Each structure stands twice: as structure tokens, then as C-alpha cells.
Amino acid sequence: MALTGRDLYRTMQFLGIAAMPTLEEYLRSLWAIVRKHAAADPAAAISPDHLLEWCIAAFTAPPPAFDPAWLGLGDIEWPAEIGMAQWEHIILRQVADLRRMAEAGTLDQPGLYFGVEAPSGGSWYNFHPLSYLEAAVRGLCDSHRLRQDDSLPPLTWGHMCQMLECGQMYE
Image 1 (cartoon, rainbow, N blue to C red):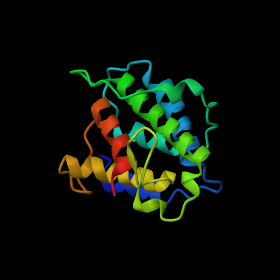
Image 2: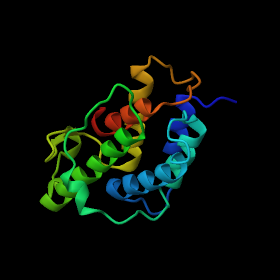
Image 3: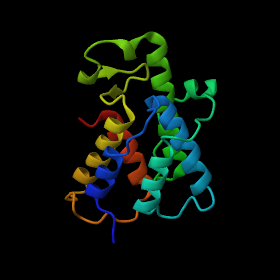
Image 4: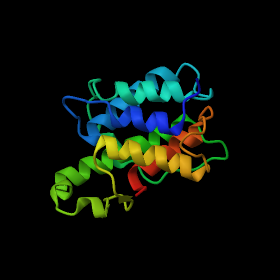
């Protein structure tokens, strides 16, 4: 059976994680998992089933240590062919954004979910792993005019980058 957007969303919605990681911890874990599994063939398409496995595993995998070098990541350069390197740049920049916002107390402010501007200049609306993933899936499906019951095609790194950006900004 092919995985649909609704399947992806429902599975993530009903995970029942006992100890929910922060979004920063979750993204660090997801980065490590995807990097480990996708590095074998970074040009290959990503199956929706693998994406779901990685997203679920990131809830319980220990996150790698924060690397202060990530704070120096600037704007991304978009080559003609988007690959794993661009995905890594986006996710690590998001981790750095979340770290800076936590250190500045931004993540403790009321009304956070109405949106805030990160130190990098990007807008953020989702600060919890589940709301982030929901926005990522909804944004991908909406932008490709996929109904929730349509089968998801194999994903490119461009799709993966789009999901990260939608997770951050999609309302």
C-alpha cells in the first residue's frame, strides 16, 4: 500500500511519545539519522516510508551535540540541482536559530505561535516537533496540489528542503 499524506500526518500525530524532545533536539536527531541513512546514496530518491521511519526514530534517538560552528551558517546558495548538502544547511541553520532564540528567551515569550523573527531573519511559527512535522507535511502536499489521500511520490532533496522550510513557516 502506498503511503499518503494523511497516513504520514496521522502516524506522526498519534505517536504517543512519553518524553517529547525540544524541537532543537528533535532536528539534531533527525539530521543525524537522515545523514547516516542517506549518505550511502545521496542522489537517490527518498521513499515516503523511509522518511516516516526517520521522523519517528528522531523522537527517541539521542541528539548529537550542538556544534557552535552551526551558528555561523549564512544564507543558503541554491544550485541548479538541489541535493543533500542544501538540506543539511537548512536543518542546521534551523537548529542554530532555535539555539539562539532559546538563549535570548524568545522561546519563553507568550504568543510565540503567532510567529517570531529569528536572529537569522527568518520567520518561525512552529516550535514543537509535532506542529513542525504537521506543517511540513501539509506544506509539501499543498504546494504540490496533493490531496491528503493521494499517494506520496518518491521525494527529492528539493522536497526534503521544502518540508523543512514549511515546518518552520507554514501556518
